[in-house]
View 1 (tube, rainbow, N blue to C red):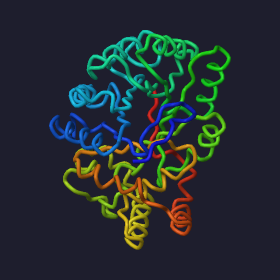
View 2: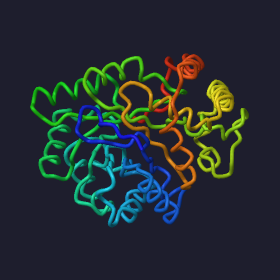
View 3: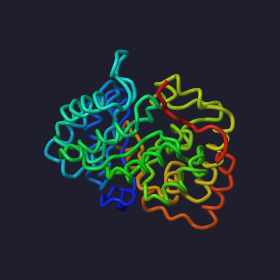
View 4: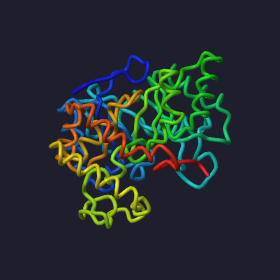
Length: 324
C-alpha cells in the first residue's frame, strides 16, 4: 500500500480508502465487517463514513468491526446534512455538531475520530461559529483533524481565511465529486487546494460504477449494482456518461487492466489528491480495486484518459450535496 499525507497535515492515509455508504443498506452487517477487516489486512487505513449513512447503521457496524483494531484505522465521519425535520437537526451550528459528534462517537465505539468533516456548506450559520465549535472538539481531544465536504472553492477559501485570522484549526481536506466523469474540481478547487495545502478526497471516483465496466450502454447492470438497488441513481445514466464508460473500458482492455483500476489510478495521479474512497459491498471488490495502487500510468495512457474525459471539466458536477 502507498501512503500519503492528508494535505499538509502530518496524518498519513492510504492512497485507496474505503467508503461505507452501503454498509447496513446494500451490504449487511456480516459482509460489511468482513470488508473492513479485509481492507485493514491489506493496508487500507482510511475508513470514511457519515452520521446519515444507512440511517446511522454504517457507523454502528464500523464500531463493531474496529473492536480491538481501532489504532489501525484513520476513522472519519461527517455531520451537517439533515438528520430530521425539526430545528437544530441539520447544518453546522454548534448545537447540532456537538450533539452529532457525541452520538457518532458512541456508535463508532471510540472516544475520538481522526477526521471530522462538515458534510456540506451551511449558508445559515456563520463560519466563525462552525470553526470555533470544531476547534473546541480538537482541544477536547475528540477530533484530531477537521475537513470539509461539498464546499465551493470560495466557501473553502473563506473558511481557511477565517481560521488563519482567528488562529483556529484549518480544514486539512475537502471531499468532492471527482472522477473521469467529473473533472469540474480542476477549474477552481484543485488550484486552491494546491496553493493552500488542502488534500482532496474524491467521492464517486467510479461515477457510481459507470467507470467500472459493469453497465451496458443501455444502463443495465448486475442485480447487486447501484442502479438495481437504488433506482434514483438512474438519473446519472445519461448518454455521454455511458459513452465515457465504454471508452474507458476499451482503453482498459487494450492495456490489460480493469476499467475500475484504470479509473482509480488516473485519479490517484491527479495533483492534490490524497486518498480515493471507493465503496464496496463485497470483499472481492476491494481486492480488485487494490490493483489501482500499483498500476503505473504511462504517458500515452494518461494522455488518452485526459483526452476522452476533457469535456467533463465543464458543466455541472456529477454530484453535489447541499442544504436546501
